Length: 202
Image (cartoon, rainbow, N blue to C red; front, top):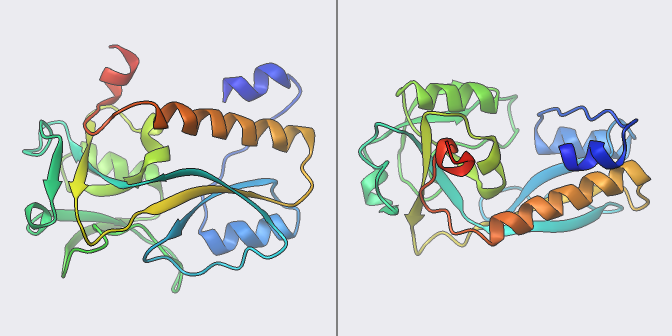
């Protein structure tokens, strides 16, 4: 987040991962200032009353596969293509929504579960399965993986939103602006299949 810290040299950014209900509780109790959450099909109808919501991206989930995977060179796959894959899903407390397999895939084979994104993506890079990520996560993908779009007429998509309390501090506003700029950059780029090396020019 160089864009934020360069304009606010005294600002220390702490990133933490948690379930959406936990993030919203922390917002309401002033334990954090900015949360990025997913909204839409297949997710709970979160209570956002009293909070400020700004949509960052209205787009798709993407499938993440190892560079060596048979899907790695394809622009898109179908749900039928995904039927025999091994999936790496999120793990959390009971009742907490987690990213699992492709949402409309019937009876997916969950091979591994992990609490953090870094672990899930590391398992993908190691060739132990595939997973899904929202568009906004693209800049944070590790080396050794690629994203592939899924053609699915039964999937209406989800939105990625930034949520804050109604009155923002200057620091929180800087963070929201940086996230909006990042989302705008992603919206301008067609990236159905992309590795981190391709994004960085390496």
